[in-house]
Image 1 (cartoon, one colour):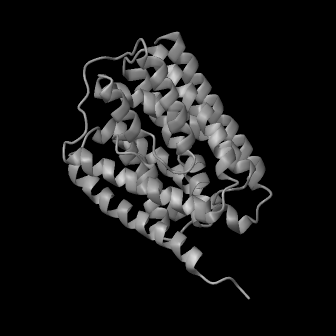
Image 2: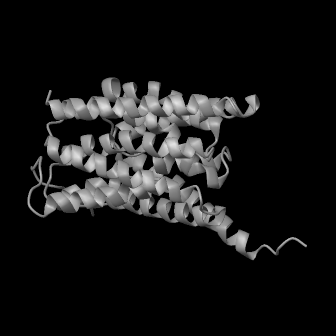
Length: 294
């Protein structure tokens, strides 16, 4: 394997270890009942959404919808729970796709590092946002995700070309876009669909997006996760469950199932995601209309 890719994977693994250490040190100071409350439900959700993530559907939107549907996590803690809890799944996926898809190492590494930088600054902003701002941001993000899933099923998105690399102005543009997408990940805007669309518009092969988007998430999510964990801006039990679910969902999708007729799954995700988006935005609206306490 290319030594640049080896270095990238080593960096991703180290980032994951750092997140695990920071998490272990921080959670010791929490109430023991809060450390594992919701872990079982988080595991079930993490198993399903990491499975779907490995197949290319993405995990942020369906996980957000599930967490909110079952009222497992307060709205303001969902971004941190997603970034810390789903990091393990992204790391496992990157080990599969970065080693098997022959995308250009220069493009891969530059977009992955840019996304991680964006996530570091984005997480620092999100932990300071009020609850209503997070509700509005995530509600809009979910509506965008649902629209993208629907457009994909209706064949309205670009199919891509055959390229496995970018050159000229396209390379710095893609890197800059990855920086922005990394920052948006920290408030719940999934990176998969925008990355696939961006690269397809530039004429890249659809398969080329997989190691880039999975490698980017595998690095940026531990990076952002460290900031969320240090700020205690997550739900410990559900995040732990999401992490554990990845160890079952990712290998099942990558090595056993490998592919599914995804169209009906996307329509199901659209329905759930739109429901979650509307309830999130309604909660934000209710917070404004509610009279202040006397």
